[in-house]
Image (tube, rainbow, N blue to C red; front, side):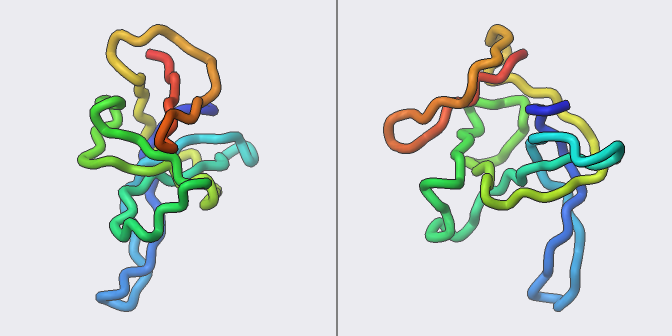
Length: 120
């Protein structure tokens, strides 16, 4: 489970209605918190580009990870850890359909982008 991407129901505050709502959001699993919860990081498109933190937001280019089904370049928000219940939907991904299995850590590329050598 650790290192897998999943889709989880995630709470957010809707400013247009003034209420809390829920949406499905891609997450990456960092660890197991207890028997039914996981420590996760959200994946977000970050609509307001001034909110992207070069140190903590790791860019994911959707063309490099087609199995994530992202519509646009997104970011792993490493400074926004959350606990997610185990009842989410799993999505198995790979960097490219033909990539070999890898356990290498992510590598920072030139220009601040990161490469995640995920297995198939």
